[in-house]
Amino acid sequence: MTARRADTVRDPDLGMLAARVLFAFQRELFTALAAQGHPRLRPRHGAVLAYLDRDGTRATTLAARSGQHKQVIGTLVDELVDLGYVERRHDPGDRRAKLVVPTESGLDMLDKSAAVIATIDGRHADRVGVAAWDAFMSVFRTIADDQGQAPGPHVARPGG
Image 1 (cartoon, one colour):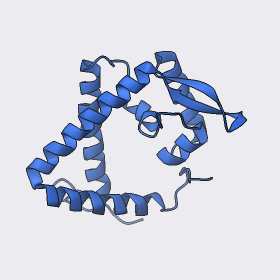
Image 2 (cartoon, rainbow, N blue to C red):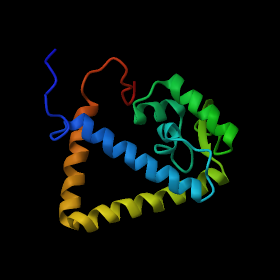
Image 3 (cartoon, rainbow, N blue to C red):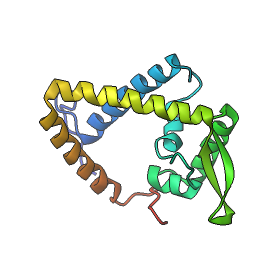
């Protein structure tokens, strides 16, 4: 293990920058959603809601997409069922499997969330320029994909 760099305040590493962006993004998103009628949602619910298809998604797929354990996703789905944002339904393609499907309230939240995210993205694009924003997002997606393939003790893999 190497010693931590001495000047992480002026020169933060990838993890620190990503965390700052994530926490600020979540704060803005969930504050806006609360003001628009969804005050009981919390950032942890994003592990389900951000990866949920409008016509439903299996919990194992949500776990793979989010990188969370299936047990964590199950707990979050239970919370979201109790809050009225999703329901479990039989998967028409496999009656043994269940889909996590957004309710009317869940669909409203997904629509409002998409609008808030578009506003955030637009603000950043305006600040740095559309071409720079598009280039940044392309590079950041590549980094996120590469980092997602790095070995780790608790990483759920798609299909695994």
